[in-house]
Image (cartoon, rainbow, N blue to C red; front, side, top):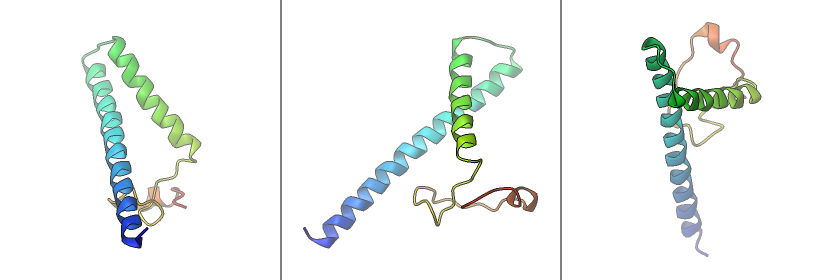
Length: 95
């Protein structure tokens, strides 16, 4: 196998992971937005319960990960970097 073929396979796999990650992120953020909307409109229905379960599940995963933010240099999926306010960065464990 040519080393260039291996690299292109790796790059395709990375693109696929980034697409899946982006879709998951957008879905979770959409659920959070719907929860806010439903709360302001004082609505409760099955969709609110599903959205709450999705957001709650993500919160549990984040807590199980030690409330750490992913860093670009450690995770190739996260290509957007941002600066945290000092008061937050002091307590954020970005290992």
